[in-house]
Image (tube, rainbow, N blue to C red; front, side, top):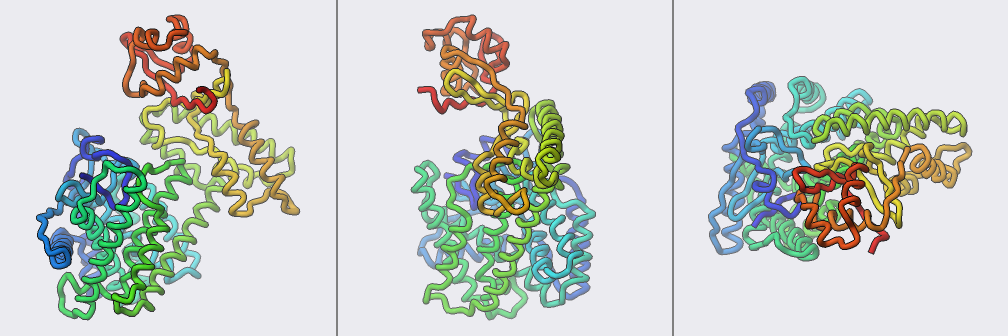
Length: 528
């Protein structure tokens, strides 16, 4: 049994990705934490992020579950830095959840502990100083780094950024706000742990259909939030210097703020790289709304006024961050980040080819804009949200081809995933136009022209027989499970060895030691 606060698929991640819990990658994180603690101690606050505090909160949660369920389940908490077993390289967020449970163990990654503290602090400062352009710019840059550098690539915050954040905190926050940030951080961690323990107490299993999986997630949210609020109501008036004095009633909103963090993370990966997180979990905004409904139930007696203000601030900055991200994406200002994303691609050469192709397309778009009288930057931005360079989402696929009738349309070796629906949805939702006076129809025409005329999509002819072979390879997972040529010819009666040879020459397949690999992901929308 395995569940994750935010899941990434239907697999046992410890086995699927051969991951392990390691010590921290170096002593730098410990040094930065020491600097942070010393700086905050001068202001009278202990903001240490240590194992003892997390363990104490976890034990508090487990005791509350025992009290409410009348049953003691021995649940252990395991912490560490999630890495690949052999190389100890960081695991990207698209490969593994960082808070999850298996059997009677809850796993918590050190990286998410660090990142959540940065996120909590940066968004609080940003909300506090929305009208200060300098602070807003700094906060956006640091937010983008924690989502792209830390979460996507599995890296800890760099030293320069961490020291800058410490200085920003000291210069822009009042003393009591350090306590708010610290308590909010701990409450976010606490809810994630409550959610995982709820899965265990509810005896949830992962081998279920989509509908059941959704129900289980809402159940874990409901029960976990109920336990969270009960702890809060019991301890909110505690003034002693103990771990449970972080559960203030205005932090009833901490779980929603945690879900906003994941919402921003997934949106960043999708907009910049076309990454789609495969998950059986419900929509994050739906989960937030469900939690808000629960908090209003009459059995919970606490004042939500201050909590509403804090949640509103984080929601406002969520909008600000995503608006700024779109703005920069439309104007090609994130091109360097997208290009660097290719560093983690399995086939580096393919990514370089894709980026070279992107350069060529951008040159054509500039000419198109000049000839059509459109604004160049807007046209380039339109392409940025049209054709995502498929980097981390490439996996083992070295190309993309789909078959329509007797023709196969391929982007080989471009490795660009075309997002026509995303593009048109974006135009409609944002009201984007390229012309003056504004003309949305003309903009959509320009978008389709860029997509199909300037994107250099090539077409290769394939016969019905070749298509039948590709379909057989596709349905039998020949991307990772090679099939002998003998087996192919036995099951695809119309094919012969010449058919296989031609497909190899067309670079659609690869033959290694008599085994046939499917080199490209193939989709057959019109072949039955």
